[in-house]
Amino acid sequence: MAFDSWQEVIWMGGYGFYVWLAFGVSILAIAILVVHGLLTRKKLAQMAVKKQQQQQRIARRKQQERHRSMVTNDSTS
Amino acid sequence: MWKWLHPYAKGEATYRLLGLWQPWLSGLALVFVTVGLVWGLFYAPPDYQQGDSYRIIFIHVPSAMFSMGAYTGMAIAALIALVWQIRTAEWAIAAIAPVGATLTFVALFTGAVWGKPMWGTWWEWDARLTSQLILLFLYIGVLALYYAFNDARTGAKAAAILALVGVINVPIIHFSVYWWNSLHQGATITKFEKPSMPPEMLIPLLISIAGFLFLTAALITQRLRNEILKQELHRPWAMEKLGVEANHGV
Image (cartoon, rainbow over all chains, first blue to last red; front, side):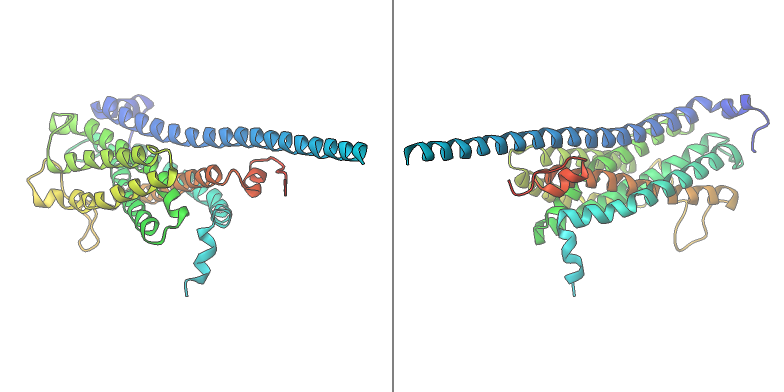
């Protein structure tokens, strides 16, 4: 260890403000990037659920229409 | 000869391959960055001239290196996208740009915070600093163009052209400290000469550089996988990957 105490670590030979500001902001910037990526994936999953429900609705409607047309065909013949 | 590459032009195959890499890249990034930064911050000796302020180098140099490395990668993706019209390469542009922009910001910010105590100023309009700032604007420009059009492919093409033209800035950044009088110092580590740094400082710096390489790769992988899913969301495989049972053949 290049320092004798935690106070010295924070003090950084008088450059503590600059060193910790540089490290803090850099780590924060990269953390924001990582979190943004994770949130994007979450949003995509929500979009996928919506898309699936939409597909299911369309499928159900198609089936109903098919059923209805079959019924009307039966009644006319 | 290039047949083995062909499946990776398809989204699903690339997504799978990146999925295999991602945990390794993330793990290596975490280990190397942590070791490099902790070593540099707490165990490396202080500099005889700059005291403890020089410890900013353990973030400044790696982030600056890969801000340029990422741009080079993005320009290669842009070339592939323009020449061979491979969509995965177009998506790679959108995946790399935010990562590169963040690294560029980190390099500029740490540089400013280091410059204040050492040079007496946060900012100077000299060649190295200005060309690095232009790099940030190029990244932002590429992203803005990518998302500026209603037709995604038009946007990707416009972004690719800017990315490709802007690559001229990378060698300018690199050689700026030799071509012009600059406040900025020259390279600390070069391939051909002995590094101007003792091993007690050089080893943690090299570990940190390796860590940032893995970090850059991991971040790009994460974003490229997201971009592939976003673009392929209409396909059953993408929906399944997102935990949704897709309706086949409807």
